[in-house]
Image (cartoon, rainbow over all chains, first blue to last red; front, side):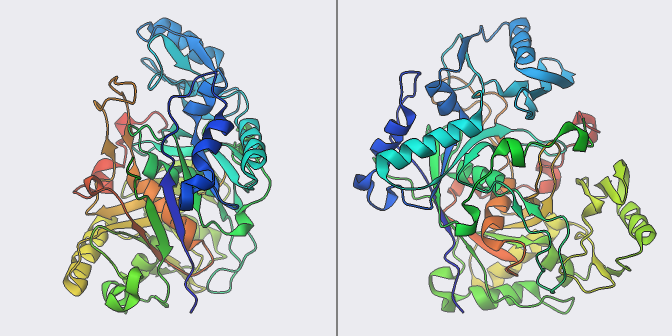
Length: 242
Length: 242
């Protein structure tokens, strides 16, 4: 029996500090070119990049006194279309993108004091742009996932999920596929984009400073079209918890 | 700069059909022994096993006419302590374990007609037993994650999460760790158990029939004690959505 090759996942090191002056694709191409040997970017790789460096490179930074709770709440509300829950200074809101997450995804860690990083305006577009720029710079066709760290209902701990994708089918639809017993499976739509983001987080960690990773070995069938906005963001009218 | 080695993830093939007569550890030891070459089980590996084969091996099977909606609902309610939402025949309940998921985790795919697979009674205990049995059979100390497929609030698609663990710290607590800017990070407790379960699902897929996978290359610091029940299941009183 032929063994399936499996996946390999490794962090991209050497990216350095990202600022609004950073050309992110250029910076990634520098460390992922042919000189990187077997860690050079290859066709079919899934490149996972954290929201933080995308937000920084896109200049999505605003002044915010980290100790000013009222200013923080005002900023969260400005980035949101709906507040679902409020407990002290923790707000669970629906962002302008349709993500439901804590504090509208506004990030105070790994940014300078007095500054907050907002989510990219359109993370799917950010992913598409990065993918096109890397194709131009390195001549390889990859998938791009922009990841962020979200909490979950009912479960402790956070995991990384996809907030933007390009070149990837974010949700694999296996409805109508026979299961191993030959019967048709129902309700099996696997969010590979989120599983890829979480897998990449395992090698990035939160404190290592590696803000990107490569997942290598994905089946060709996962590469394709689609966006987080169209495939993953659940419409409020389909939601049982909003 | 030393490169971090990264992770490799591969499916375990050749397990065959699991029934209540199957000794799961024996069956896994058969395909993961020294003959398996570089796919043999190694110390420090994380072995991810789907709930389905654990439930089957533990005989957690009950008679259920798959077309009898009333019987299905009664079974779901019997496995639950609380119903959170109800839409047609979809129930979101809190199981006796404290998991909040669709239909109490009762599984009708990949089981025989007329049969339903219930969740293991105590998935952490199942993981501990499997880990101990593999240590005896193969002489290696591994971590075990039992995974299941759950939906999420606010996001389309399902992902695999951990319902039981052994030999692993399910949630890494980085509170108090300095971030890359040297400031203390708040609220960063990473649920590596769920990220490992999701990563393993990427190589198992739902229809390939591979019900287990190995994640190799995890930092030693992740191996340790802890359980899903104690570390991941959020207590109702800490929950904003129950």
